[in-house]
Amino acid sequence: MIDTAQVVLLFVLLVLTILVLVLGIQVFFILRELRQTVSKANKVLDDAGVITKSVSGPIATMSSLATGVKTGALIAGLLKRKKKEKHNE
Image (cartoon, rainbow, N blue to C red; front, side, top):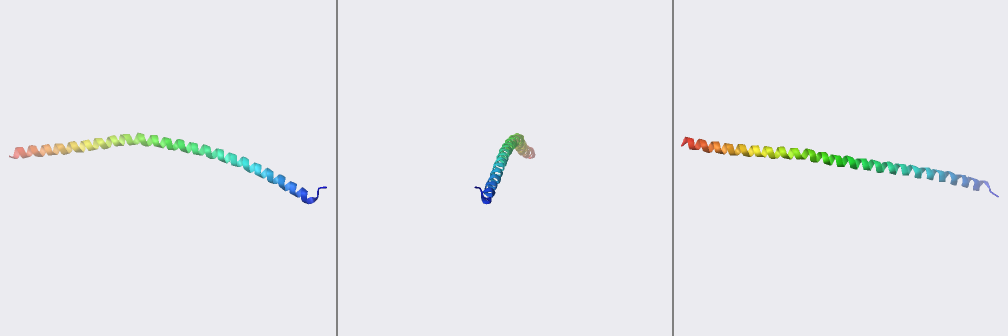
């Protein structure tokens, strides 16, 4: 009927089937965890974008303010020089 080789093959087939099933379940959990990790990383990158925008706004304002002060100082210096030139004549 069933000899030793067939019993061994059936046992090996059963063990391999169980191992493949366990590995499939593990791969499913790993992929689900990877999806959650990618989702969290995406949220972090979105938050970093918002933070960058919120920081770059005041920096741009300070830059334009500094440029305005520099221009004002240049104009004041020119006016002062013209006033001295008129006063020296």
